[in-house]
Structure formats: C-alpha cells, structure tokens
Image (cartoon, rainbow, N blue to C red):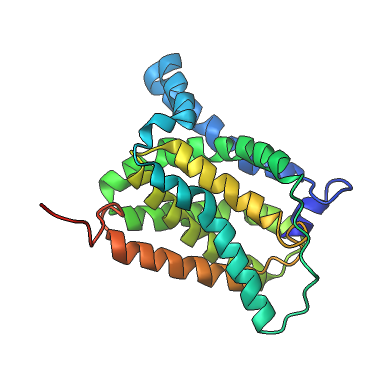
Length: 241
C-alpha cells in the first residue's frame, strides 16, 4: 500500500491525483443530490452529520471505533511474523500520528459523507444491513481500483484488497447502526484504518491484503453472527427483561 502514496512526490506518504478523486467525489455527488431534493438546508444537514457526536449515546462504542483497526493491523503483522515473511523491525511514527489523524479525518469526511451519510440508509431500507454493506462495499472497493493500478500493484494484490474493503464496509455499517446512525462513527473508523495502515510498520511498507483481508473478514463474520445480518444492531446475547 505504501507505494500507492509514493508515486506523486517525495516523502514517506504522498497522495496521487486519483486519491483526491476517491476522497471528495462521494461528498460532492451526495451534496448535489441532496441539493436537488432539499436545497441548501439539506446540504447543511448532510455536512452537520459528519460531526454528530451526540448520536453516539453509548460511549463504549468508541472502543471499536478507535481501536479495532489498529488491532487488526497488529494481528496481521503478527501473522506475517509467524509465517516467516521478511519484515523490518517496526518503526511507529508516534509524533506523526496526530498529523496523519487530522489529514485522514478530512479525507474520511469526504468519503463517508457520501457512502454512509447519503447512500447506506436507502439501501438498508431495501435490503438487509449485511446485504447493503456488501453491495456498497463492492462499489467502494471498485472505486479504488484506479489508484491501485496506478501504484502498479499486482492483480492478486488488487483482488485481495477488494475483498478487504468489502469486509471493512460491513464493520463500518455495524458501527453506524449501533451508534444512533452516527456518520462521525463511520468517519473515525475509516480514519483509523488509514492511520493504522500508514503507521505500522514503517509507513505501511509491508501491508499485505491477503493477510489483513481474511482477518477483517473473520471479524465481520463474528460481528454478523453476534448482531444479526438483518440490522447488524441486535446483539444476540443482550439481556432481556
């Protein structure tokens, strides 16, 4: 994944032109569609949802929002170590992480305002939460193919990364549905995915979706089992009165 960011300019993390397309077009498209329906008031409501922290009533959900993807990447690194892949000693740029968080937060707003803030609710009204997640996740995955091709990744790498994106979208919808449909929850999770990828190890130099993808998919399967495919929000073992 690191090569994707190194094509445009010198430095450990650099964005190609296609990254701007991937990042801001979902927001622009959603804003145009909302404006056609509700004018400026609708656009303002769409943008306001990006900061709807009050929707997250149960603060315990900040734990998976912030820490789930770092854990997935840590497990991926551990698996890569266990199977003997040649890896450098990890260098985590702790001083850079706050800057990465801010930069990727802006990018996550650009994507999730469109994917989550506009698209996912009508899809869930038509299909189950799991089906809607897989469909939207597939569109989202295809959306990023151009950037991966520009980075000269192999077809196998690109296929595994598509698989990872679909599984990740299931997790995003799960968090969204369990936090009062908070777009901010989706943004923060998306943000932490990018921060994790480019912080460990060595600015994402050895990211392998063939390992991270299955781990993320297993996590999505567990979530689906526990919260149910219909809504991804009805915990199987919740106490009943």
